[in-house]
Structures are given as C-alpha cells and as structure tokens.
Picture (cartoon, rainbow, N blue to C red):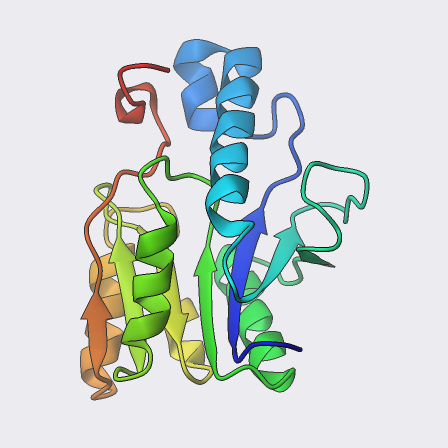
Length: 196
C-alpha cells in the first residue's frame, strides 16, 4: 500500500442489455452500452494518474483483460445483497486494509473531474465525511475516515432522496461533513451532454 487514500470505483461489467437500463428504454440497448463505455473511459481517464490507490469493484466477475490496467487498479468483486451492503462491504475492506481516507465513485458522471476527486480527499483531512450530490437526488461520490454502516441502511437506492437521507445521517451522528458541487449523473436521455 503506497498511499493512505483509497478510491473505490463501482463498475458494472459492460454487457448488452445489462447497463444503463433507463437510458436503454429510450435509446436502445446498443446506444446505452456505447454511452456506458464512454462514461467508463471518462472515469478511467480522470482516475488513472491520481497519486492514490484505486480499486475497481466489478458487479459480476473480475476482468483482468479489460481496459482498466491491472498495474494501476486493484480489482475485486462486489459482495452483498443490495447496493448499500455492497458499498458498505467495500468501505469496510478498505479500512481493514489500513487506509485512512476512502472515497467511492461510480462510472455515471461525465462532469466528474480529477480535481473534484482530489478535493474530496482534501476535505477528509478536516471532515469526517464528504458527499458529492447528484442532480437526481443521489450522489456521485461519498467519502469517509471510518466505516459508517448506517449510511448504507434504509435507503431507497436510485431514488431522489438518497443524498438528503445520507446528509441527515451525518447530522444525526454529529459528523462534520463537506459537500462538493452538484453534478449530473447520466441515467436517462435528458442527462446526456449535448455532444454525445
């Protein structure tokens, strides 16, 4: 382990008909998959050269032959019954491995940048937690300095209350937290940038 910071990337194995299902409703499976691959290469581009440790958690199987270089990214399998449990398990694993600051992102956000990720880790020097709210009510980034299992319980995942419910958890636990800029997660056709 080189750094005290760990970036977890939650990644769905790119299979036709299995990714971006809400996009696929209006654009079809193939276009949805193409957009998903574009989103993941954006995520790879902004994270590849960050001077922190990075681990990709795959949804179905660990792919050592894909576009994510094995030398740059550790690779693991998501484990748990729902998104909350899977994320919590990934955080716990990160802290058990000795990391002091752990952030999680997905691969859904064209607006996410290297600077925003750096900012998130910087915020964890002075705050217990950090959250990057998405316009749809979810979040594109969550970070913390110790496991906080309650953040992953009793949430209606993919609903518009996830970020506010999570911030309420911070307040209930009297945790100090920082909020990053609100960005757009790409879930439906209206979320796409004009050029795609």
